[in-house]
Length: 60
Image (cartoon, one colour):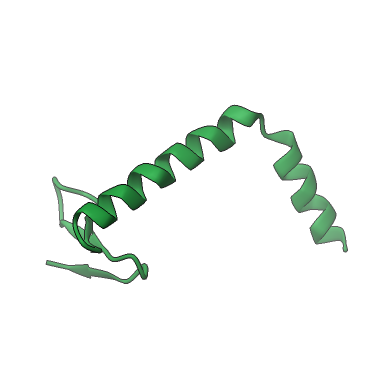
């Protein structure tokens, strides 16, 4: 019960813009995943980690 209260406090303490930015990033991420048919390049400059829609990570 205490954890639920603390979580609710944490979420309520954030302003609406925080959630809006997060949802916009999620939308962009999902659109990119769809465009690349499930593969999404997380970091182009270093190891090139591929993240699938299922969340599995593997190096190229």
